[in-house]
Length: 357
Ligand code: IPM
Ligand code: MG
Image (cartoon, rainbow, N blue to C red; front, side):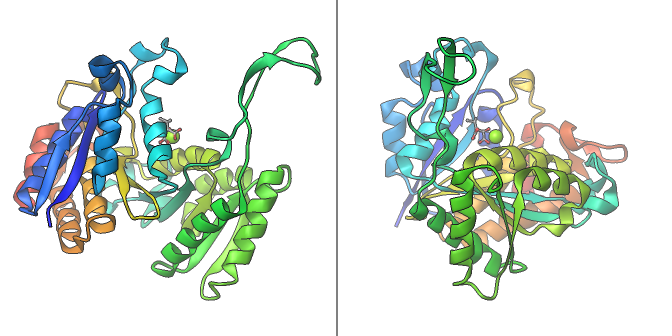
């Protein structure tokens, strides 16, 4: 049966890197129907909204979504509901994409690109699992008002609500423990239970669910300590599971340890294995249109898509092997270039992956 993929390039370098991933998908000769729609700033330009109804409908009807990136400074002055970021938040909410997988892998060929000492990151392979549809990101109520109490009654104030329900924590816990079973059987749950009620419940539920996985070792860490340990001894981690806000911050930190944020894919899944796949980096409007962006994170996101949502494990492995091969050949986009390697453009990198397939 033909599988349908929504291709949402978005803004900045999004269209350039998506074009290379689409090349790779075509080269695999699978029975895939690719349909493109505007999102983010491009959605706003085309239809007056970052997530136009037709784009949302396409996403809902597809087996998977391949997403580029959204955002550009020129939309910073729009009201919040119209800003490009609302597209990705809206898709997460509408499709219930609660489980976000962000691997941070240090490729051996790029070990010197890390800002940490090579021995700290060589062989690094962490999987951050971020809860993606709850927490302070989506908690209601939120808004602005005049303070009735607090330090400055009568002053203007803004507020957001951090909240998690037990079932929300349970389902992401199961995702994390099951992922760990396929790896080195260790989970670190990151919380702030020493201060926040929300994360005391998080910790309690993680411990309870962990009892159903006696083969997996669970430890708990406060988020401030986790941020420190990530740069002190990152290899002590394997699977890290945390809430939406902490996961946003820690996944950026972890990605930078690898020295190659241009290499890192991500997946956001719902309970039907429908997923949105996107590079971990952003839209980089400063280099858009120059043909120098690294398409490998997007190409590797397409591999994750084939694996997790479309059931094409062999094709996923072929892509991953092809990426290893182009790195071994010494091909590098500007972001991962070092002396003695060959600098290539976005399109040349995509072509090289296709050739390696
Ligand atoms: C991410 C991004 C988003 C987030 C933004 C663009 C809304 O930073 O995917 O990590 O905060 O989740
Ligand atoms: Mg982020």
